[in-house]
Image (cartoon, rainbow, N blue to C red; front, side, top):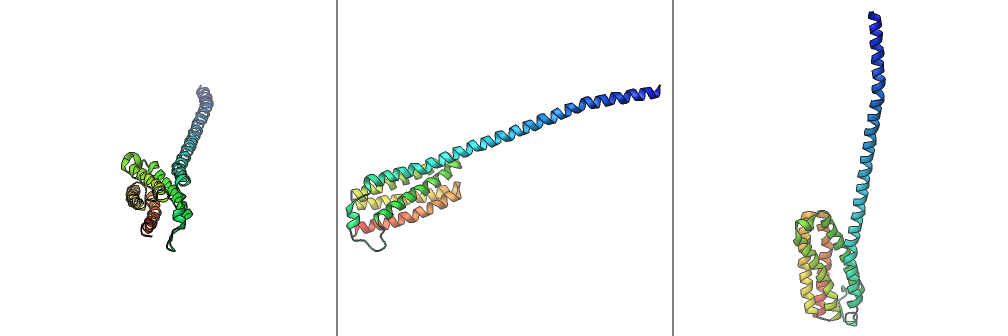
Length: 202
C-alpha cells in the first residue's frame, strides 16, 4: 500500500510539473514581448523627438537667416559705401553682409539651445533681448547703407552691442554653450561700430 501511494503521489507531482511548465513559459514569452514593445515605443518616441528637434533647429536658423538675406537684398547696395575712402582695415560691403549672415546663423543656433533648455519660458527677458538684437541688426542696412544716416547707425550699433551683452549673460545661465556662441557676434558688432564711426568722420 505504501509503495502504491508513493507511486500515486509521484505521478501526481509529475503531472503538476508538466502542467505548470507550459504556464511558466507562456508567462516568460508574454513578459519578453511586453519588454520588446516597450523598447520599440521608446525608440519611436526618441525618433519623433529627434525629428521635432531638427525641425525647430532648422526654423531657428532659417528664420533670422532669411530675414537678413531679404534685408541685404532690398537695402544692402549703395555706391556711397563702395566709393568712399576707407582705412585699410575697413571690410568691403560684401564682407559686411557675409558677417551679418554668419551672425544671424550663430545667434539663431544660440537661441535654439536656450529654447531647448526651456530658457525662454523661464526667463522671457532673454527672448526680448534676442528679438531686440535681431531687429537692431536688420535696421542697420536700411538706415546706414541705404539712407546714409550714419549717426543713427552708430546709436543702433550701441543698442545692438547692449542687446548682445544681455543675450550673452542670460544665455550663459541657461546653457553655457549658447552664451559662448554670442561672443563672436559681440566682436563683429564692435568692428561694425568702428566702421560706422569711420563713416561718420570720413
